[in-house]
Image 1: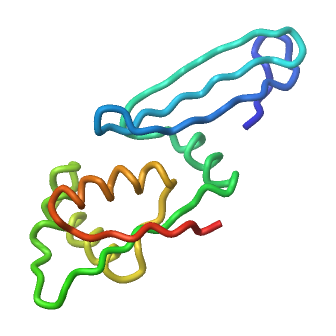
Image 2: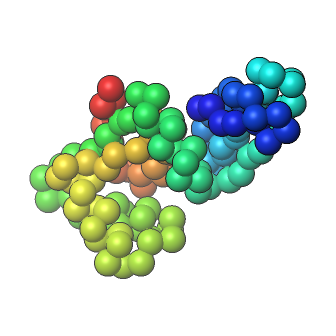
Length: 131
């Protein structure tokens, strides 16, 4: 990702990173100006800012997570994971339905974190790159 430098206006090259730290999503942006050498670093937890997330996806890092429940297996564990992540009941139902049908799109790191949470509840997942 590139942005204009706030100090001199030259191009600032930024590195965007998402990772899982202590079962949470951690994101960071580090940048350095090619003109004046000014540098910055910012980071956060859980919800990656939209601009950062879109830049990661634009760089070709898009994946899809699907869930394949065994015949007769209850969706309760699947719903529970979405509810524990803060989704309302209607949101959890919609997310579960997407996970079972078309899949849930996201960055590989976002989906790996979701997959870990689902596996903890014995919900099988598949992640495929959409690149």
